Each structure stands twice: as C-alpha cells, then as structure tokens.
Length: 568
Image (cartoon, rainbow, N blue to C red; front, side, top):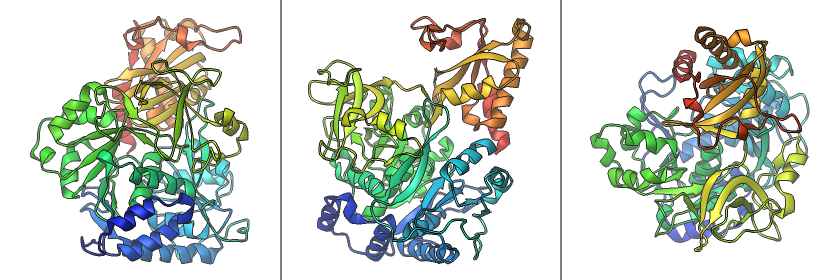
C-alpha cells in the first residue's frame, strides 16, 4: 500500500477549531479516525523506512488514511463477530509492526482496551501482564508464539497469530458489557515501571489520548504543526507512551503521517529521515548524544526536518546539535500518567539549561516541598501538576489498575505528584533536576531497581543486593548491582568474582528483558541499613564518587550487548 501525497485541501481555520475543542468532544479514537480518513483520505497515515533484512516491509511502506480505515473495518468485523466488546482487553505483542494500528482502532471501535506488550519481555514478564490485565485474548507475532503461548497457559488465555490473523477468533470467556464506547472508555492499558518492582498498569481512556494529542498540537512556537502535512518520525517503541500517547494521537487528529522504524538505528538515522520525507522528529536525550558522535554525512543536512521534540537532551550538546543538523530541538516533560506535556517551545528557549518550559492551557504546575507547600523560585521541589482546581484529573490516566492506594497516593492534595525534582526560575520556567523515584533510565526504558533486586535475590548465591543507576555515556544510565554473596568464598578472588558476576547476569537475562540485566556488578561485604533494616543506597558510596570506579567493579556491558544481539 503506497500512499499518494495528494488529497484533501488544507484548512488552517478548521485545524485551529479542532485543536481548541474539549478533548471529550472527540469521542473515541475510532471516531476520530473516521473523520480524519474522510478529510485526508489519500494522505499517508503510517510509514516505515526501508531496512534490508527486516521481517516486514523491508523496502519501506506507507498506508493512507483511507486504506487504514478499510483495514480497520475488516479487523473490526472479525473481532465483533467473535463477541469482543466493552469490558474486554486484548494483549498484543506486535514487535513494532505498523499493522498494529489496524487492530488498535478496530478494537477501539468496539470498546476493547489494548494491552501492548514489550517485545523484549520474557515469559514471566509476559505472563504477569496477561494475568494482571485479565486479558481475554493475546495476539502475537509468530516469532514469539512459543513464549506467549507458554505465558498464556497458566491463566488459560487463548492466543492467535498477528502475522496470520485468522478470520475466526476464540470467543471471549466473559460476555461484553452493554453499551457503546465513548470518551471515558478505556482505550489502552500501558504498563510503567514503579518503585514497588512489578510494572503498574495505567488505565488510559479515549479522552486521555485526545488530550495528549490536542495539547501537543496547540503548543505552537517552535512546535507549530500544519494540518495534513506533517510527517513525524519517532524511533521509540509503540508500547511506550512517548510514541503511542503523544505522537500517535497528534497525527491522528491533524491528519499527519507517523513514521517509525523497528527501533533506533544510528547508522541509518539520517538516511531514514530523507527517505521518508520526515518534517519533524521526536526522541529522547540519549539519541542526540549518539548522533553527534557519528561522522558527517550528506543526509544530515539534506533532510526536511523543521523541529524535534525531545526529553532530556544534554545542555552541553543542545546548541551544538542544532547548529550541526539545522533544526531546533525542543525540550519537553511528560509522563505516561499525565495526558499532557510541558515544553520549552517559545523563543527565547533556554537551551543551555535543563529548562522544559512553563505551564500551558492544559496544565497547572508547582514545585512543592515534602509537606506539599509551594516553594519559591530558585528552590528545588517536587513537580506536581493538575488540569485545574475544579477538575484536577481531567484528561489524566484513570488510575493504576487494581492499585487504588497508589493512585490516591500519587494524587494526594489534589495534585499529581510526579516524583521529579525541579526548580522554577524567576520567569516561571521549570528546570529539571533529577528523579526522586528509584528508577533507572536506560536508553529510554524505565527500569525499577526493586524488580531487578527481586530477581537477583532469588539466586541461591545472593545474600543481599542493592540495584542502582550509574552514569553511562551512551545510554544515559546503566544498571549496577551491589551484591553481598551468601559466603565470602564466592567472591574470594577475581576469577571467582568474574564467574559469579556472569552467572548472575545470565540468571537475570533468562528472567527479565535484556535491558534490565545488570551492566555492572560489584561484590561487597555488607550494605548499609537503617533502623527499619532497609538498605540505605545513599550511603553505599561516598558523595560524588563514581561507583564504576570502585575497585572490583565488573563491567558486563559488552556481555549485555552481545547477548542482546544473539537473542534477536
């Protein structure tokens, strides 16, 4: 399916009117799809760049809005005939296949929520998502069919092929609820890591997705978008909020084209942007760091990118990146739970700092102390946000599935507590300082230290463990495990320590996604604990010391890279 770049006329006034609408007035994502397909029928909706050897569309691929709607209707009839509807969830492991959207909108039309599964997840992780979400069905690419089938066996959930989607589906065990989908209906359940170990399921409605999209489109400034003309390239996975919650609804609403590869490929980045005629890009801070280290190539200035939206670009690289590659990189802040973003998109931008902008029409924000009291400019505090005083949660996530306590804790005092430390300057601009949550941020993946600790603690040779983030020049942060072995003999000499470190790495790799396995291991005699017997991570190393430089620290990153490549 190749899309023509012709079609419905561009109407800026209509675009502004739609962006000013209340997000609830859009209804469901499927209803927005039908409107967009009618208006921009022959314009491209989704595209992937060419990549030789890829299992799907190696020559590249585009599909128009009209073709997308036709494919959605075909899938909708199949799901509807089997009895899927309100109250059901369908889990999907689709490995970044663009045809995911045919299922996504088809299920949305019926009021069914989609549960995307990280394709790097292992069987135990997949099973947790299947069981916790109470999915009625799992759709998986054939390459992971054995793992998914094994994960589904325990809870007794049927699975079908994504690559060879059948005309007939297993009938769901429970009947659908009466009624039809609307703005308040759950559209997706995205799992995000938390400090308690297991990922938490964020309940996301149609209104949530539309709020994110309309907020993005309405920011203007350096992020000004043209209806029906933008081609937004996002290399981040569709099971992440960055792409599914931010990029996807924005292009759905304004009739643009969402372009995404199977994953980020530094070597073909600029060629991809040129080949797909991208007009905008969206990525995270680790990517500029990588691109700046590449040798110059003609494509890095031959592209048509007008701007990039980025979370966490290094201030020392910001100006250098913009001058070398010829477009502004606009800093932003958002979370899976929030349904809106804050962005430093209006000139003059503070590109030599970690400024991420001021509150906008979609969000109120404060920096508060431990008692929830707003702190003055220049004083660090936790970022808390809301829609407004009357409807603080409007357009946000609906809560953490089966965890009302965590939901209410996050919303204490009528504000959503982000867990991020920020500072507001005298001009009202917020600057990011650090994350309060015990989360390791590796190449865009949020890793809960508690989950890795639980995995390592289950090993017979581990007495105690503390997992923490250490700096990484390419991936922002890496996982480091400080391990107390159950006997001193297990770490008595370098060779024994190296062997045990590799054994622990293999143990994690078998049970967790590859990116969660420790990239560094340090064996210690003991870990500092407080009066509650909890490990005090802040006291493991002296302030200002790089844990990687500790004598005996074992670098497993080459093994991590090699094992990841072998697994694919």
